[in-house]
Image 1 (cartoon, rainbow, N blue to C red):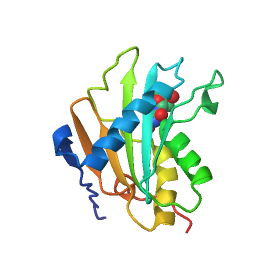
Image 2: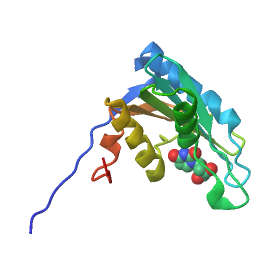
Image 3: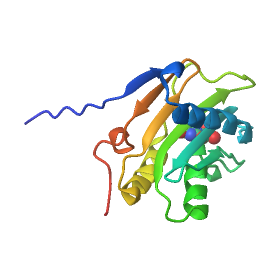
Length: 158
Ligand code: THU
């Protein structure tokens, strides 16, 4: 029997360590939380995807009384970008959230759920480049250099 250890490397940045483009992307994710429809969880998530032409596409979580019918912010943004910006590569995604009626972002970093990671992984493979993942909190941003970093032992059929 052998043990295998899988590690992942993240970078923690304070807000003033972000590039201008990344600061703009995180600000867009934050602004996108206003579009959240989350009467059940009261957890307002925003996502902002940067495309290879510089365009930013945003999305927010949309809930439903039939709970599984809702969708996360990341997939809202990804599917919109895939539908409207045909053939454009994703280069980065920022994710941020506010809880309840708070105007502030969460004190902890928001990382994409497993279903969203799987979806983003496929866009990453289509792009042929890493999609950087910027996971915001009120005080800092955790960065992964690709979605694959966040999906060890990923399922993939191509
Ligand atoms: N949610 C997202 O939008 N993105 C995530 O990565 C995790 C969770 C949403 C789903 C649901 O509307 C609410 O947050 C609470 O789970």
